[in-house]
Length: 301
Image 1: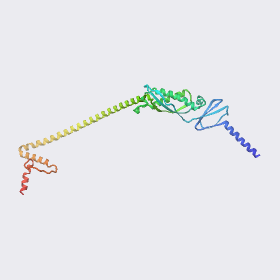
Image 2: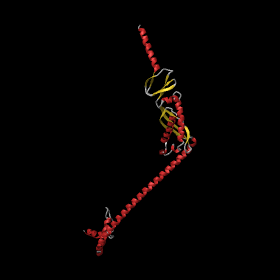
Image 3: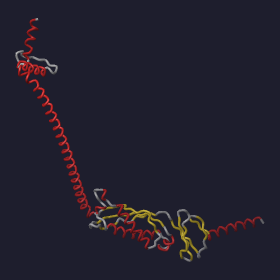
Image 4: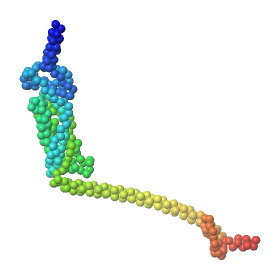
């Protein structure tokens, strides 16, 4: 009796499990699901959890990875606006935004089929945008003249417009240029052009430096002229004061030439003895003849 009860319980559990497998399915956090009824998509599920469905062949569940997929197109050659060949490669991050559109568009939701389509769309958009810009917008000695941000934005806008038009259910999360290169046939020409541009830049900087140096020299010359003029004016003032004082003493010296002669020799002697100096002189030579009386009186003592 007990064995029969256990058998019934095990059978009931197996039936419940089998029923759950037939009528219930689970969607994970990283997944998005599409439920088809007789092969046609009838609903999409983007939130994680457990859901009910009819068993096959009435309904079937297709699950896709909803995380961002990173794709890089081939390193292909295109023609720029100034007729130069340029090699470029673009990377793109995309994810499934609408599973009901994505599922029928790519043969049951094949990621490989989606990337093949995306590669074609990227190639067309990249070729169209590259053809609008000159080679110097991609490769330039002056980083400020490179237009990668603008070029990437235009490529993304074209790709997103194409995906919306075709109702692919794909959303672009990011897009950028990964590599830029030149074919061997034009590499030397481009290097020569870049060298020429660098020489023009160097020449411009040298001219700016020379102009600045001339401005500094002119300012220094002007300042020096102002200082010299001020010094000359001060010297003229001092000479004028000296001449005025000399004019005051001139009548006195005219009345007493001996006093004037004595004053002149005394000033000359003062200049000779301004520093600590050892003198060897002839007492008969002016202005040292002033010492004659002093030396005679000293010898007499």
